Length: 82
Image (cartoon, rainbow, N blue to C red; front, side):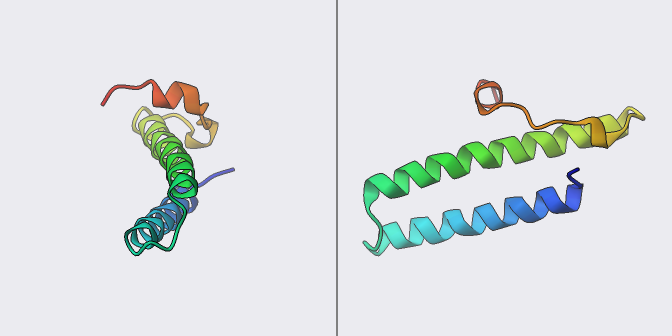
């Protein structure tokens, strides 16, 4: 079971890793292809975490159980429009 705090903690960890990767790329310390692959993966995982957090908060707002929210597949989350 995920809690909002655990989700936010994971988001923070991934955002920190994303910053480190971008800094490393700028400094020339990371292979560009590997960096792009990892950044892409991080972005998709971050989207899933943010979507799960929004889903949990919406459930609470409607008087439903936040713990019934589920991580949606990356393919579904990535097809959302901002």
